[in-house]
Image (cartoon, rainbow, N blue to C red):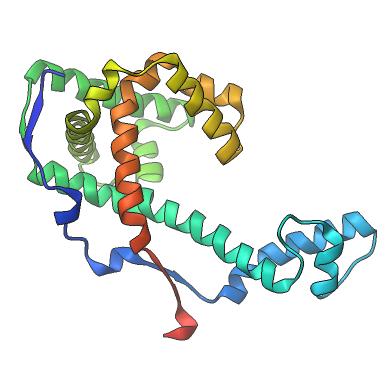
Amino acid sequence: MLSIVNDYVEKEDITIPDYYWRIEIESWEEVRAPYLDQVKDYYQQLTQTSVDVIKDEHFSLLGLSGIQNFDDFSDFVKRDYTQEKISLAFYDKLMPYLLAFHGETAQVILNDDEYAKYEKEYLEQIHAFSDEAGLSFEEYVQEHLGLRGEFVKHLKERAYEDFVFKLIANNRYGHLLEEVSVVDYEAYIQEQVIKFGLDEIDVRENLSYSQFCKVLPEMMYNQELFSYFTPNFKIIESTNE
């Protein structure tokens, strides 16, 4: 890249307000309810009998991996729900904060032509998303991005924040591009299929080898931040407060 980042705050020195770490739920009993409904439906399909309350003996008949009783089931629900909500909190809540933080504090030398091209492509992508959704540009920005008022100005601010993130990622991991190979790409594809249960064809269509090479530094920096920050998230039951 022609633009460069001279200085930026390391993740360990970024101050995050405490409320960012809170993931509030009414109670674990409420969280378990839809999971239990699925178990009841599965039990009925398997046994052709209905049941009002799922008990330990019912779980032993279902053959669910690692779940032999209600305590096992409760532990699974907590793990599954916590993992899902922490991931959502990181990407939907914390990452916008981190992007804005770096956008405001990083010392950057921009190549005007390079950045103008990036900003143009960023806005064109939003237009493409709005066309796919069958919405006007303004409707899409309001409904899907939650922007109001001078939304083009806000989008340009987001484009700058994303660009700074890209610069920092390349500063940290750009050297990997000299060594990345098709083997690395194939390993990534298999990880997505095995670890996350994604369809291999869809993964390849959404991320070609050339795109993988292009965004690898950003993926690595994103994973670095995810691994560092996610242990700080806490599930808070309102019934315990």
